Amino acid sequence: MAEPITVRPAGAHDVPAIQRIYNREILEGVATLDEWPWTDARRRAWMETYRDELVIVAQGDETVIGFAYLSPMQKFGFRFTREVTVYIDPDHHRTGVGRQLVEAVIEGARERRMHVLIARITSENTASIGLFESLGFERTALRRQFGYKFGRWHDIVEMQLTLQSPEEFEALVTPGFRVSVVTTPEEMADALSVRRAVFIEEQRIDEDEEIDRYDADPATVTDAVHVLGRLDGRPVATARLLLDQPHGEYPHIGRVAVLQSERGRYWGVGIMEALHEEARRRGHAGCTLAAQEYAVGFYAKLGYVARGEVFLDAGIEHRWMDIEFDETEGGTT
Image (cartoon, rainbow, N blue to C red):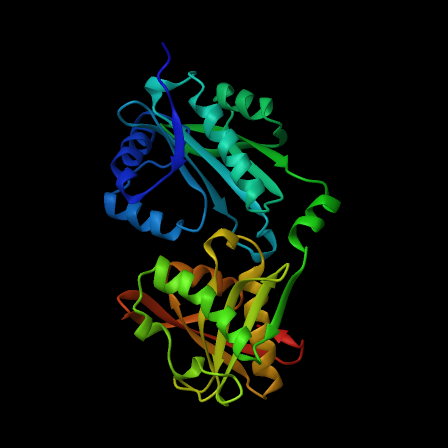
């Protein structure tokens, strides 16, 4: 009788199993062209970096026997594209585990409003190529002698799955997301509801640390600007701009929050662009912010540059980052 398989989100407790599968492939296979096994510390840091991405495992009767994840692209223009990566314990190859994982990844990508999935597979891995083809992926390129491992060159097959037509995609990503400046107590309450969900409930920050004088009735606060993002009328994202410049010469962006269910879409960028515009409108040449360490890459794609050492705020690692506006283009550098 076939072993029952459960596909579920990966957690920190899955690190040993993921390490066992991946490091074995490093030492014995060519599904990855890594040649040095990962340390547990590196994997835990990877899990933290990918916590807003899709990372799943296939759970057998007693242990994890495979895992899969989506990787973001480096450039911001590729934000609706993800790379699919799947690894299976060799003892469970050709048992259907890989299909279950890839199907779950495709479904997860659709839920996250991704548009294109890509996969890169060594050409000799014909079983994986066949699996992806059976699920709708098309071969788009053959990279000859693209990698080197075990004393020989390896060709890489690139494959792609487009999840919607351009028209369908536009309907998915722009169905009524609007950003506005908070001007009423009711709008402030909606903004705080997002922050409570992200910082207090999800990240376990004390409410006394999270809510401060800048979060009072907007009519009474003159040194802060809050923006609120709504999706079809529902509050899903928020952030604020402190105009009294408590950190350096630029106004300080903070409390950037997007509901967990809405991450991986465009909402965080929309919130940031709104605050940049508010800063420009008030004559400021840039902005500064304290980025949680896992989000440094997100802000870097918007043009922010890190400075200084990592520091703790509410027990969470942060880095200071700055952006200088390019006024000649009416945008950011």
